Image (cartoon, rainbow, N blue to C red; front, side, top):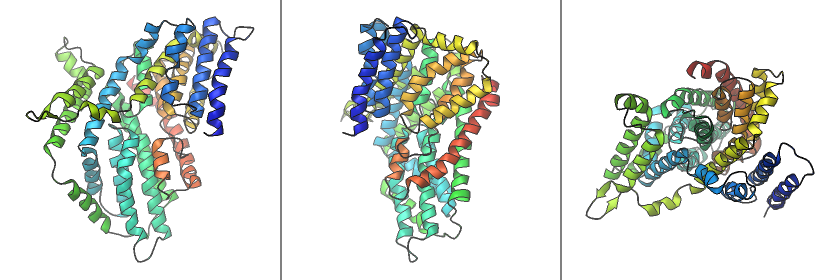
Amino acid sequence: MEFSKKAGLFIGPILFLIILNLPFDLISEKGDAVIGVATWMVIWWITEAVSISVTALLPLLLFPILKIMDIGEVGANYGSPIIFLFFGGFVLALALEKVNLHKRIALNIIKLTGTTPNKVVLGFMIATAFLSMWISNTATTVVMLPIAMSVISLLVNDADGFTMSDKNFALCVMLGIAFSANAGGIATVIGTPPNSVMIGLLENEYNIEISFLKWMVIGVPFATVMIWISYLVLVKLMFPNKQLKFSASKDIINEELHKLGPMSGKEKMVLAIFGVTVFFWIFRTVINDIFPSLKLNDSIISIAAAITMFSFPYNLKKADFIIHWKDTQKLAWGILILFGGGLALAKGMSVSGIVDLVSSAIATSNISVLFTAILLITLMLFMTELMSNVALTAVLAPVVAGIAIGLEIPILYLLIPVTMASSCAFMLPMATPPNAIVFASGYIKVNEMARVGVVLNFIAIGLLILMFQFVIPFFF
């Protein structure tokens, strides 16, 4: 066990006990108890002394004991509708992966973009971003990596060896996959966990609902611009490959598609259910206007899709369904618990008066609204390079909401860009799973990722500030 994990394992509960037994109140008895629990959770989340999902269970144990909330109130956060929205999304992703439809979609997108070096890079980035909108960015990267490695191996084994242009191409492909996996998830509510943490907080605490479509209206353009800028920075500025020419990549893509064979019946079923689900997510508000008694929401649609995947028979005689319950062994159950822990912590901050205290402190200060937004976006973006973006959002989102109230601006104006910033970690291999996966390929050095990443981080900050100033007030 690493020293940082060993240290974190003991430092977390020790700091919790110290805060609990201070001879004076930091805020109040209840407020200090929440600060103690939050400190313990943050230490364990940062050091990963235990699984981040196990850490998320602490409120269930400690909040009732410390009389912050009773067990029923705490437990309700772990069964929030937003968690079932993500559960349904995970089941959809599981079905896409089981029938290999995600790989077919990715290969066809790459094939469509063309086979010149820069177009191959763009194809990989578009395919990765599209898949990351619907399935986990980790799974997306795992799918894309072997295809990318096959294309790169052509350059390693060609007549002129592995030249500088070859190396630059390999870097562009690998970093392009990681960066577009991170950015692509921002486009939809279910694309990346921090989005759901924020939306859960808004629904639970402030009765503010953001529909699937409304999020996409701002999420898709931001992700598109970020991916396009990433592409230009990689192929034009940092790692140009002007001398590189090869045509065999087309053969690899066709060969991979040939291995998949024609689209199976199960793939067609999954594609149909997936398409109908996305249709309902996007046009839910229109459908509710036409049929007001339905009262559809994104979580209901998500659960309906999941139940359909489990219960729609592919072969009734053989009791063969698209997915079976045993397939859910691969489901990211830990992430669902993590959401619950984040929502419970946010509720604890609210009921103990911490959020109100932050709000009033900001309200009585003379801090500029724009400066505060820049500071919070920058803080979130660079902190997420070092710790889980879901855990970080769970801790900071309620505080940011309190700051927005104190500044007397709509909560969404500040919370949306700060949450988006948590998915813009481009600098370090440990920042996100996609970064770590492509780093493990052996084609990237830490300093190469950091060099490009720091440029993209500052570009992302600039875009998010523009969103804060002009885009979000227009739509919300």
